[in-house]
Image 1 (cartoon, helix red, strand yellow):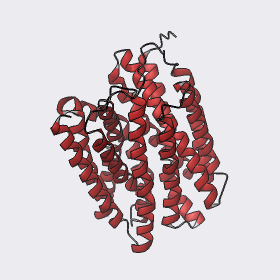
Image 2: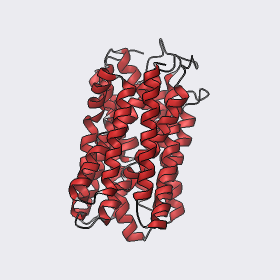
Image 3: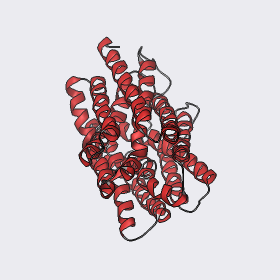
Length: 382
C-alpha cells in the first residue's frame, strides 16, 4: 500500500506508542509505589513481586513477539498491545489484592512487550525506507515522554487529593487517548521489499544479548525504587515529584544525544560509556543521601537508560541480515529477564538488611560488566 504520511508524523506516532507501552505502562508504577506502600502496607518484597510480574509478562511477550511463527499485521499487533496495556494500567486502580496486582501487571507486561517490539520494528523500518532514520530518536524519546506524563499525572493527582487508585485510572485513560492517536499517525507497512527469514547472525551477537540483559538488571532497581528511596530519605520528601519529572524530561532528548555520540565513536562504544554514566547515577541514589545527589541520580537515570535501550537495539540490528524483529525480540527478552530478577532481588534484600545499598551495588557490578563486554565486542569489530 502507498502512504504519503510525513515521516515526522510517523515518528511522533512511534513516540506516543512508547510513551504508552513503556513510559506509562511500565514506569507509572514507580511514582505511585510509595503511596501504595503507605496505604496498603506492602513490604518491599511484595512491591518487588508486583514489579517483577510486569517484567515476567514483558519477557513472555517479547519471546512471543519475536517468534517467526507469529503472523499478521505488525500495526495490528502494536495497536492491540497498546489498547490492552492502557486497560490493564487502569485496572490496577480497581483492585487491592496482591495476587490481582501480580496478574494484572503480568498481562500489562505482555502487552507492553508486543507494543514495544512491533512499534520499534514498524516505525523504525518505515523511517529507514524514507531515508529518515535519524527520526528514530524521536520514537525512542517516547519513553521519556511517558515518564514525564506519569510524573505530572501522579503529582497533579496528589495536589487535588486523588489517591493511588485514581492515579492508576488516570494513567490508563491518558494511555488510551494516546493509543488512539497512534492509530491515526502510524500507517500499515508496505510488504514490498520486506526482509524475511532468520538471515545470518554475526559473531558477538550472543555476548551482546547477554550484556543487554545485565543492563536490564542494572538499571531497573533504581528505576523501580528511586521514588521509594526519596520518600525514605530525610528532608527530601518534597522533591519526590520533581525528581521523577527530571527523569522523564532528561529521557526525552537522551536518545538523540547518545545517538550523536554513537555517530562519532560508534554505537557500541556509546553504549559502553552510557553504562558507566548510569553507574554514577545508581551510586548517587544510595550512597549520598542529599537532594543534590538524588537529583543527580534522576538526571543520570533518565539521561542514560532510555538511550541505552535504543543503542542496544540499534547495535543488535547490525548483527543480522534477516528479519530485525527476531533480534529485537531476543534482545528485549534478555533485557526483560534482567528486569524480572532486579526488583524482587532488591525488595528481598531491603527487607533483610533495611537498605537498598547491597542491591544497588550489585546493579553497579552488572552495569560495569555490561560496559566491558560491549566495549570488547566493539573493539573486536565483529
